[in-house]
Length: 138
Image 1 (cartoon, rainbow, N blue to C red):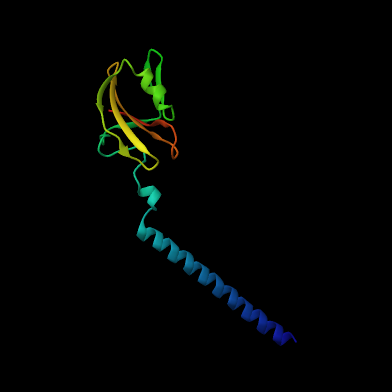
Image 2: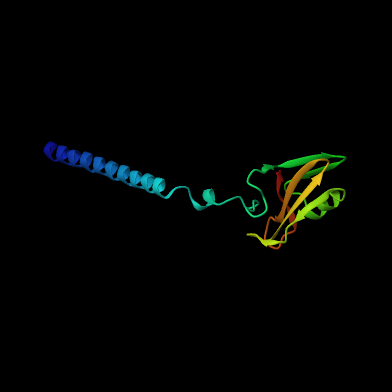
């Protein structure tokens, strides 16, 4: 009886070692495949708010902008409210609307109190209200 027990015990150790070896090989293949293909589509895609045609490469994205005299803009603000607060600003360039992933995207360049900035306005959900999706300082 003891001879059978040691034979099964010996085979069990080999099966366990083979299972660990197979798991190690699978993990190694997955790592090599990930390194060869690079980052996924979400990591390689440009930010949704950035438009290569209207936002210069040297522009800096900011989450909020305070321009004084009660004019402050934050990402996520309603577009209608933001544009009404910017009535004293000089519109440098208003690009026509382009198609964004969730609806029309509008890109506007302003200058107020010596500060030049770009607003990207688009909805945050399908058929949603346009909101400030990006603020870029030039």
